[in-house]
Length: 136
Image (tube, rainbow, N blue to C red):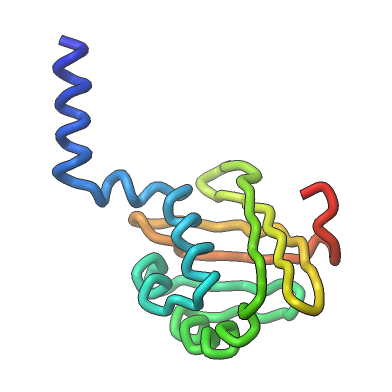
């Protein structure tokens, strides 16, 4: 009986792949891949329509539309940049990531917190921790 349940679960995962792809961890992985290339269509897909993006250090809060519009500027800034990220943890439905941005001229180590709703990212808040990524 247990073997049948496992087989059924596997078949269901192949038949409905979106269930497996919509976990918070997968959404955040998609976020960082899209960030590497300023992939507008990917961001449009993974963000809820009412998503908010907060850049704490710059005191900026953006709507999804404003964030997508800012990707032209980000596309230039991300050239030659290395982005490394690691999971900090999940608590109360929020996923914390620690991220090292190694730009050509400087480095920023930040904490980013993501919220989710209906299989998409509903909010992202980013704040710098340090100007170095020592110990990352």
